[in-house]
Image (tube, rainbow, N blue to C red; front, top):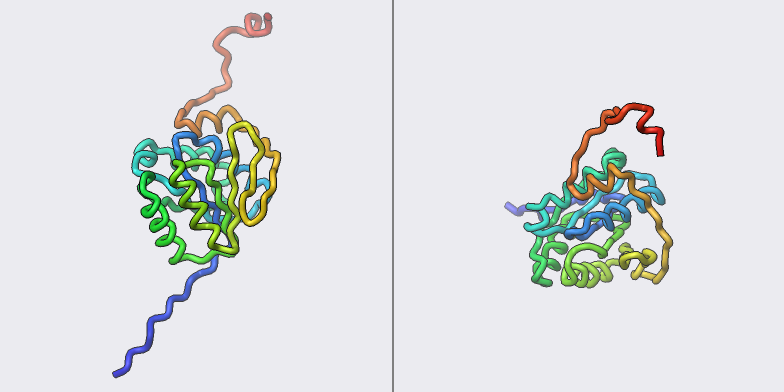
Length: 185
């Protein structure tokens, strides 16, 4: 008997946002908020992380900060070796050969230098990718397929800032001191 070839039908997702995870969570939170404010539509987010960052729950901190956007995204985490460019490339290759996306938006601001270099090298091979980087205190830069600068200024609330650092708090809207004391200079 002749067996027919196996055919894989891949679901073509609309867009994916790729973020490299590192100690600093704020750049990813600001980038994701900026992207959602520009493109308020459902998207997949892929966090490229490391075992150390996952133990420190950095991806969870980023996601918990984006709770107001939770209905707009689903996320995956790719865990890789931040000190081995070939392993980072292989991790990206394995993930993206299983899925297809119309648009790939990549933020290489986080991660290690090797992770950023590997992501840049991987995604410039894809014609549907856009790569972004934001130096500290400077405008967001699109690096690929064309070079552009964006003045982004995404203000984080105190709650978002604390959540991005894994700090939880509760607020019951009660003053510790009486009203007369609070209204004095």
